[in-house]
Amino acid sequence: MKKRVGFVSLDSVTVSWLREKLKAAPGNAAGAQELLEALSDLAQGNSQTLMLELGDAGSVSNASEIVCGELHIYPAARRVKMGQNEISLTPKEFDILLFLAKNRGEVFSKEQIYQAVWDGEYLMDDSNIMAFIRKLRKKIEPHPDAPEYILTIWGIGYKFSDKI
Image 1 (tube, rainbow, N blue to C red):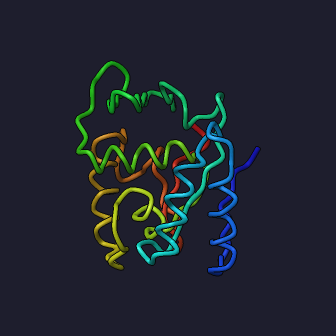
Image 2 (tube, one colour; image 1 turned 60 degrees about the horizontal axis):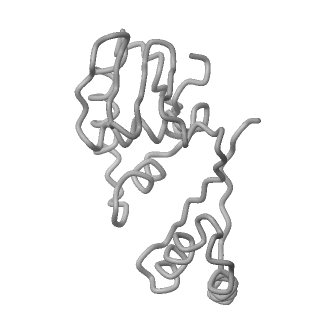
């Protein structure tokens, strides 16, 4: 199934209604408390955007290892290997790589990557994301000038290759 990103604008009445429904939800509803907190942040103005991901036991986001060609990503251990060689990444480099790898084939703008990885408001500084992508490519790509893993989609942003 091909993934896509949808954007929904919520008014304060809808956010309040959702919050009330979540408060009344059974205690074992997976993700309900986290969603309730995120909606509260929206209502209080602490956040302007909320990204949701539908997960299941077999999804890539819950995998103990993500394998893409020679690249092996271990989310729980926050480790990355290329073949047998361990690759040292900064925490933000790892977060960006994991976000893109979990969403293989999906194109994300620099702002979407920033919002998925950083806490706080987007500072409209595209060069920050570009610098991280450049550093990541130097570490994981066999040929950083002709990337195979993290691809640039000109005029839009980046995606992790779904061909590997």
